[in-house]
Image 1 (cartoon, rainbow, N blue to C red):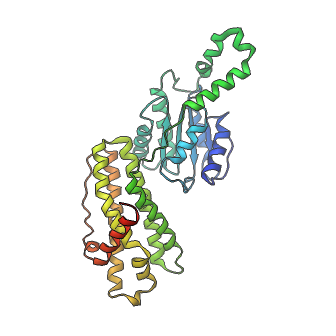
Image 2: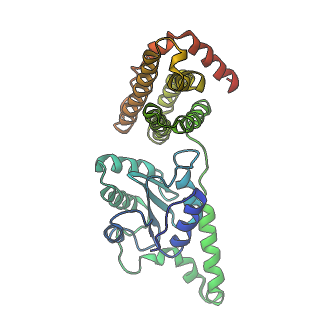
Image 3: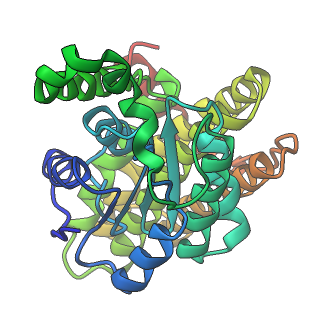
Length: 336
């Protein structure tokens, strides 16, 4: 096992892919308890080379455009049919061998309640059990199945053994390509992208605790929005995704309008130029927290296979005529 520091997405992908050409476990150096985790995983990973496990720190996918981007990048570059990935305590999986790998990973992540090792071990166990012809443990000789074409080929393939194995490996890698489709609807993605731009604006305000808290809140909201639609795509019917898109398209547009530099950021930096600045600031912060809380509740509902419930109204923001104007401007600028 090689351990390296997490960096940009391309750097992480390259480091992981290099290791997984010859091994089935990659754990980045910032991850604590790597030796014990490696031992636990090697006890359950099949010896046929069908499953790889990657464990990275929580910020490894910070530059990702969507939630499963790093998983998709890694899965395209490694020879294993299944990749189980933990980024912090977020457990994901992609597989060309079975259809419900991501569902298995999400279910075990929820059941483990923050115990990433347990979530990973159980995810590998279940995927190994469901994978056709996959031995459910690390018994000797388990890797013979993918070499069967070489054996059947007899003397012809033996004469060109190195070339044949290389071709097989390349074909298997090519067949693993995952469609890089963003599960977040285009309109919602526009709002998430704008939220991340605004987060930077708030984070750059010097010596302002409220701005720093707002930056953290915006980052959490953007991440949770992505996670909701990723899980809806993996676990729920299309009707639930449509409901969520309809619910959050307007709410996020209104919230983005309130977070724009001309409103909340100006209130924080020049409160003397506004009437009732504390009241206005409180309204936006309350709205940000309320939408985030509802989205987290929705994620839990998706995980529990329950219908989505929406209770946030943002009445205080609706009552501000200037925010209605800026909301229309946001929609105009985004082409809606």
